Image (cartoon, helix red, strand yellow):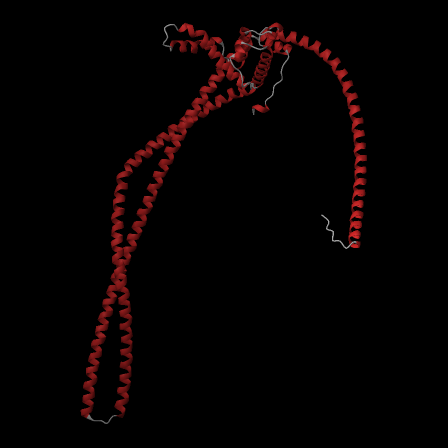
Length: 445
């Protein structure tokens, strides 16, 4: 960025005029042969125009530095410390004006050309700062807005602190309940794990009982089918058999015993079916209990999630409060800096009002001198315009001649290129013909 910065090297009259506007009366002799006291006073005046730092303003820090010294006679160092303080501020001012090599030599052993160069940079920088005065005024206007924003932030901070205190109190109240819920949740989880293992065993038994019930029902259907077949066979046999009382008795006895056995088997199957039905009812009750436990566990998980969300919200509020504290400190620093700038600007305004009358008189003299110089420059400008017009005509003629010459050169170059390619083609044809005549193998590179 410093490489792009540029300021004009002002002549001695312009330097004198610029310094006279600030109430500094300098002569040509002082600028041609500058002394250490002269450059010290002029540089200090330029520094004061921008930063409001004067010799009187430096007396307090100089005295503080002298008081902090352990030497028995600190007055011996007063001049050197004052010089170093002023050199430090002038070096910062020179760096701002893009003079990076400013040193003590420029104060103690000033060079005329170097002094005029530094004064040109300082005057240019001071005028630039004066042009930025509207921006400084806008900063003053913004300071009121910043103050209002700071008060609003303070109110918001108080509100947030109150909310945070309420949340802390609520959290302290909810902590025993949360501990009870954690304990209850752990107990429910352990009970659910035990219930899950029991349920798995019961489900396995139910599956086995379902398989056994299906087998029993299948056997019952088979027995009923066999009974129907036997009754049908009995009816058909009765119609065919000879009516023998003894044989009928034996058949009746055999069939009665078979029927008794079938009834016993049916009774056993019915008892097993009733047991299975009772077990299924018990399993249904267990399933309902499991569903109630799962619902209670889901309710507990929801309450835990709400508690975690509240804790997360509390952490966010803490982070927001820390950020507001940092922002408040930054706004406080900005306010102090704006107040310091405002005080400096007011002091500068008062100083400018004190010098206003002197500047007005100097400006009147400058206007009269500039009017005379302007009339002289107007005459010189007309003469320069005539010379520039003549030079422009000569330049137009030269450009016309150059364009004609370039056109002719281009035409000649095109003709030469055409002749060159034609000659090269004829040479290749001749070489090829000669090689054919001499039975030679010629390759063109």
